[in-house]
Image 1 (cartoon, rainbow, N blue to C red):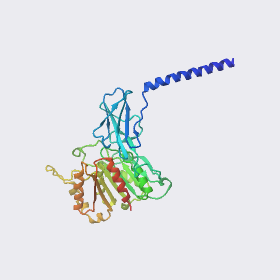
Image 2: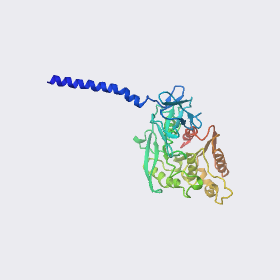
Image 3: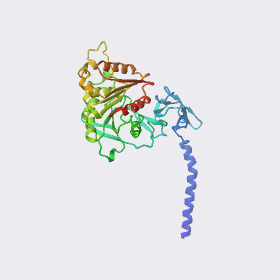
Image 4: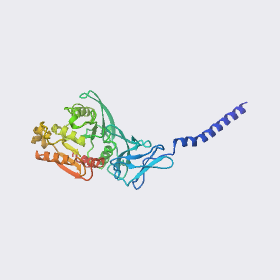
Length: 382
């Protein structure tokens, strides 16, 4: 009796195994071919793929990717897999999506993403750049922090980088507030911006001092044109009343002017000026990437005071200028905010500020902003 039961059980196992073996090809056929995307070759060509057999048109969208322009057309093979190969692409991080018959879609085969202001992008990293690669060096930690904003009456988020060894030490560190642009979020500097890896490599090479880097959310609501924004600057209030006090009460920072820095790109560069200049006694280092004072000149129909007129007390205060160790601007020669940057630099120079200004190649892209961070951070807290 036991032998018969054993034979019956063995037969069932073999039957189940045979059924599964037959089912796997059918299952694979239903799922379609295996798709790898993105695929990076040794010569830095990148192939993007997506399985969409019923789609009629697909484009790869990614404005920072050199040569991609408004979108690269993808072609479909006999299995319904669409693909396009670009390159060689310079080392760096690049955001992209697929536009499938007019619908923007992230890459379903890649887990790497970067959050923007109102959407998520897929992210591809092309290695080969020593200053932002994930090298074999001590690495800092990146934390996603939720805090309560008393000025806005709700919970908010920021990302905070702490240098290698922070968790097991007792030392205090200088703090660098790093602001994002209008199309970004507090996640952007640490993903597409590679800020953590850039700081890791600089600190390991002893090119930069170990520091805490705070990357707050610059949007307090929908991004609006300047003429539609409320009179109160909600982000400036949140920064002064909540972000800075939170950081200085929750992290081991050296809380004085000589050990505070602030910088930002595009919208964040304007916010940097709106925070740093009125509170110049709190910051010894200010960096403005691809930005300046927006609406620096008065329109003919506008009787309101200009930004310059509103801040004359600070602009013409020689005592405050003495404690400002670095005031740095960087903008690409093809940047649409180039003239804004130039006019802002000239305005500050007119009031006696020692401004450094660098016009690099390129435009309004993360390709430049990562380079600016890599050049700006080593000059802090020296």
